[in-house]
Image 1 (cartoon, rainbow, N blue to C red):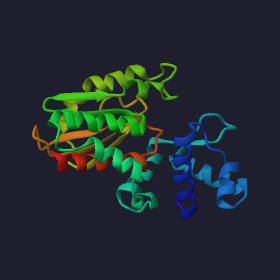
Image 2 (cartoon, rainbow, N blue to C red):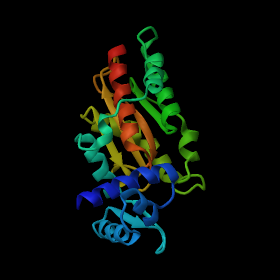
Image 3 (cartoon, one colour):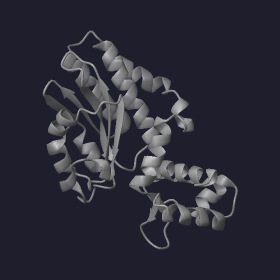
Length: 236
């Protein structure tokens, strides 16, 4: 993959998250200052490599799970420019205002989840003892991917099995991202799970995070989830 192709892939991931529609060559040509034909050639190569796909022959491209994984790896490894961006002042204050040590641990965790739901418009989740707290299910099913009921059964399957899977697997990284088919259950649900591990009075392996469509603003959501986990551990 050439540097320009990597930038094109990053742009498609980010633009598709915003517009929920395939990204075309004309839009990217203006962004990169080259001809649409040059962009189409790069997109065709990225498609051949498995990073992009087309919904229709004449449409633009959307990322595949492999494309999202390449993007997420760059964010996690610190090579993506967005990783150095701080959360906005309003966002940081919203998190800090809802996560404080003056409340009971259960209330603090629930407040943190509810804040993530508001900020990401995804489904929020956290482990509280042996229970899994969920909030924002309507947000998830309001996304364009699921608005017509497509994939809802697979999403339900994932949610039904998520608590025992997390208890058994106990992901060990401070931030873990499971994209689409990488999910051990509900792998065809078209969802991504982003979770942060933190220490709580209930367990050293407590988790908080979000579940949303694979089409989402990974850099921003990953930063939010990681920061929330850190603030929770400090507060608790």
